[in-house]
Each structure stands twice: as structure tokens, then as C-alpha cells.
Length: 194
View 1 (tube, helix red, strand yellow):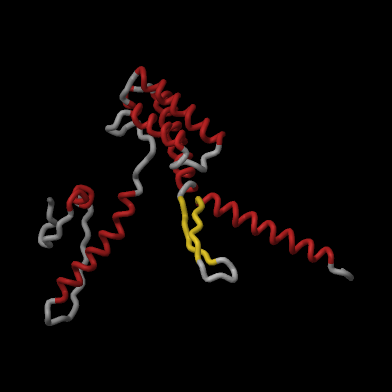
View 2 (tube, rainbow, N blue to C red; view 1 turned 30 degrees about the vertical axis):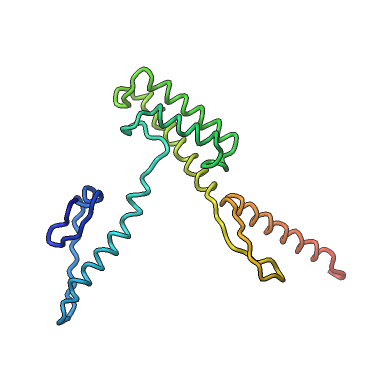
């Protein structure tokens, strides 16, 4: 385990990424009981916690330059699409676009497995297909995220759990808004004397 020099804070696997970042924070708190060191540790912990989501957001569904072979990645995407759990909200058109892009990438990488060996035209086509696949799968994954909430029925003290995907919640919200707008228009049209 790596230690940050002069702090004694164990950083573990993130030290490799943090080693290239120099953070200089100078705060001198007027204390007599040595709480300056505690304040600095607290500030360091807050900065590390704020930086960790940026490192975690780098994951892509398909990456032709990854150490894992592309065939494994493509098969995992196909399994996830078939199961319907991870990408339940992907449309049929987007699903077919993803599958055809995966097939084009596999065809291009069969002749030359390393992306650096591809011709410039095929390299551009592979990276464009990869970007499209990652964009479509990221969007579908976000919309397929389950959101559960506890709700009480009107006139009851019993609460129940309702779980919907983010896309279902958005569609329900939009349909309720459209229905409310339609009802308000009907009310305005029916008023006498207007």
C-alpha cells in the first residue's frame, strides 16, 4: 500500500492517478491544541472524496483499446441486450444500430486485432462505431436505472413501494402533464360567455 509522503494517509490503488496531481493547500489555523493537523486531514479527505467520482465515470461499455479482448466485450454487450435487465429501455432501432456497429467493429478487427494497425479510414470507422455504441448504451443504461420510492395512497396510512425505471417515470410525468393541459383547455373552451 502506498503512503502519501509526510501525511501517513493510506491511498491504496488511487495513488497512481493522484501522484500526477500536485495539491498545495496552506491553511494556518490559530490553535494551541494541535487541531491544525486534524483540519488538514479533514480537508484532504474532502478533496479526495470530491475527486473520486471523476475517476469512476471513465468506464465504457466497449473499448477497442482495452486490455480485455473486444470479442469478450461485444459478447457481454449482446448478453446484456438479450437479458433486458441492464438496457431494458433501449429501443428496437437503437438495439439494431448497436448490434450492427458491433458486427462492423468485429469485422474490421478480424484482419488486424490491434487498433493501431488499422488503416486510417477503418480506424476512424471503428472509433466512430465505438463512440456511437457507448453513447447509445450509456443513454439506455441511464434510462433503465430503477428508482424506487415509498408512497402512501390518498386516505390511507399504509405506504407501498413503487419501482419504475427512469424512462417510465419520465413518460408518466409527461403523460400526466399532457393530460392536465388537455383538461385545462377543455375547461376554458366550455366556459360560457368567452
